Image (cartoon, rainbow, N blue to C red; front, side, top):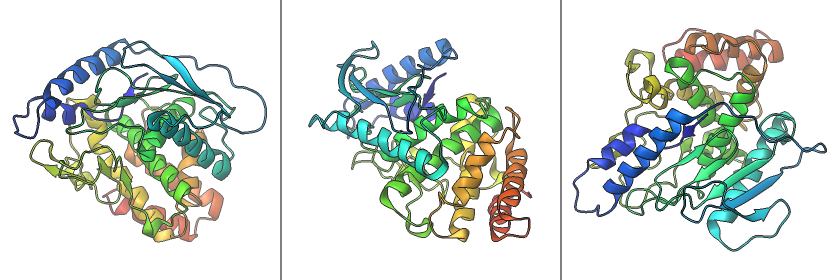
Length: 343
């Protein structure tokens, strides 16, 4: 299993760019694309390390790959040890803790599998690697090229996003292609945003609803990799082009790349969630987030669910928890209606 944060179509734009502000980024993007393609082609379903019985507390181990390909690298911080003073190590460690805290405290879900699975990460992967990914057993962070991308440990929403892929694989295990793959990506975006909001104590209406707001350098004309609330507006840059995410089903992209557009079409269910959460108000993880979480763990979804199936299931879950005539059901229905899906 391999899930990378930066979509291949973004790296492809960097790889062919001829721009005076870029000296090294195109060549780095080419090597990142080649490496990611190899990982995708060779990825296999993995068995995670055994959980450690006990109270729902994180079990984190951060390793340093020392700019090499070999994983995991040298262990540099384990659970309970003090900060190292190295920002990538401590940011990864803290981000894992914040992600664990959302799921454990808001939903009673311990780590990725609900049973306390270890949270493993490796920083400084390869040299100036332009991505971060979940490989089924650990999250891996590149340092970025310094011209388009910064290091990825500094974005809590990225960490929450990638670790949520681990939760999805342990629960609904959506097939990573086409609409079900876009839902897989959307679920990671939803909970990536909620990890950040939970950590900051934000209400839905004050949150940024951005994913990866910290990954671009100041030279990029963009605010994030994606916007849940306003898909298609996260960046408009002379190197990267314009954010291609649709915000409505009428603009759904039938793509033969990126596993059928999984990173592009995720904007549609993303907007449905953000719209519902803002209508409900308060902390988004408490009501809208709980509905989405119970939807993926309930066992009522097929692995090839499309947007309509997922939408219907969220309405059913909201009705079962809050009542069929509740404000929650109305908000969820209106969220999906806003993107052209009747639920």
